[in-house]
Image (cartoon, helix red, strand yellow):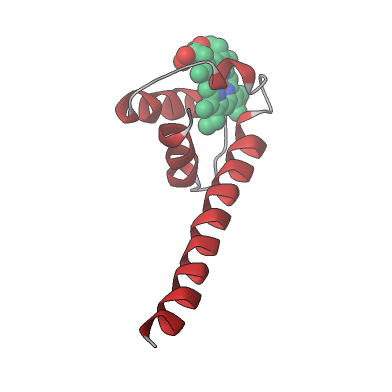
Length: 80
Ligand code: HEC
């Protein structure tokens, strides 16, 4: 009986997790591709602090991230 409740719940959460990953990618791809390609970012491996610094540096170059830095950072630290 209990699995009838748990199954739809886990389905709901996995759908949510998937769409938020996708959303982070969309924000990142939109915000980080206006000055250079995404390739130079994709090939870099940095720690969370280094990515934070990189995002700040891009802002000094004039990038506008509209408060979405958190989503972009989440994508960057989880990318392979
Ligand atoms: C306003 C223009 C601009 C935007 C928007 C921009 N960048 Fe950059 N980026 C630059 C410039 C200019 C350089 C080359 C100079 C340098 O490396 O500091 C660069 C270089 C880089 C590099 C290579 C050097 C390094 O730090 O390893 C990475 C990685 C990078 N950008 C990441 C990003 C990310 C992530 C975003 C989105 C959050 C982004 N950039 C958005 C201007 C921009």
